[in-house]
Length: 151
Length: 327
Image (cartoon, rainbow over all chains, first blue to last red; front, side, top):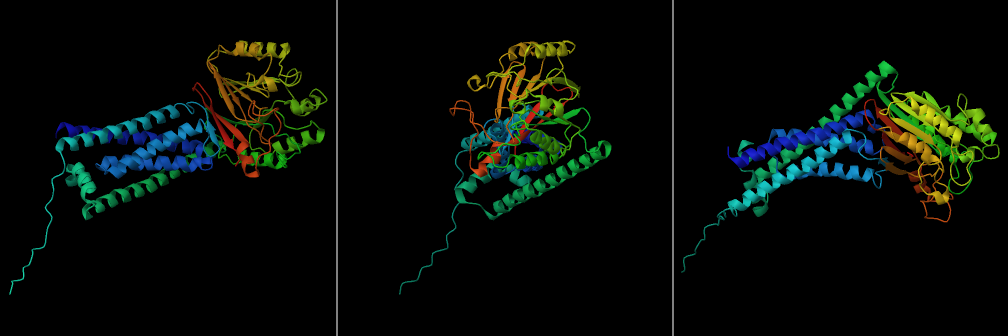
């Protein structure tokens, strides 16, 4: 196993861990209180479920780009929701600072780490592709030309 | 899958270069299906675990929150008796707020109404608001008076109905879940700004003297204890004397009403949270000639009204304040 493969494997497991932490925190908060909040409660449950699902998928194998983008979207969505709830409000819901503690801070760290890990992952893949050069061209299959003997 | 893992990047590259092959399509469908199935399964597991935990807590403590966790609700400025285009049914709005408290999904340890229970301090309005608050599903209901609760009688009618067992003009303190609560009256001798008076400041000094500095303190008042907008009277002229007494505490949370809008300010270890109303919105500071009731489109009215829940886990440093729009 070369260095790049070890790095990819480490990134995969680390991203799975940060997604699992974020999902667990959202699930815990949903169960404790947030499920009583209209819309916000559903968003918490959705965030927790999708984060845990992606965490499991990352443990199974190396996912395609679309799944990694999805994982990044979940983490970014949680961060955007956090900022909105502390500034303009989100569906009539407002919180203050890093409350509830310590879940708010831990969740922020986990989601930021998820985005960073996925960014490093993608950068590693791009760097490898560039180093490997353009993909080899495949020969197109052409039907054999038939010639009509001239009369 | 190992085969694909080995050539992950090559596949992505060839996908972009030549479009998706059947094999790749199957692979993407597999991942997508897996994501959907696992998401649904996770949601089911989370719901099931939360449901069984609630049932256990409910059996053990009559649906009360787990011991060591404090949860209370702040409602404010119900202005029962107000009549005007800003809200033609303040009683209905207050009833909705009470329903929202009763359907929070947990039973709050107490509910605090932070003043302006009534609009004109009439006996009928006091009676109506008290009747309505008896339907709150909570162990205790606390109040502090607003300036609308002391019109014409210096707060005597308010004190007769709501201030039993309190000191002075209706101030008091209590402890629960390791948090010390102080309820102040700064609406009785106000000229333009709120005013506490020496007797009340002395009460606070004596009340806090026996507390260790790591005790979380929560202070309720109707008018803000900080200078939110003194030109409109949104401040308390002698609050700095109380603030000075509170500075030694690691965590102080001051919760007020009066301004009918959400506002938060932190000064060191002291955090001030202005609550919104259940009645009608007021303009943001300086956005209108005077703080008069704002008429907003009917659909937007509920966005301006709301309730506040506050949570505290014993051992934590700070309280978690959540503001909710009227559902």
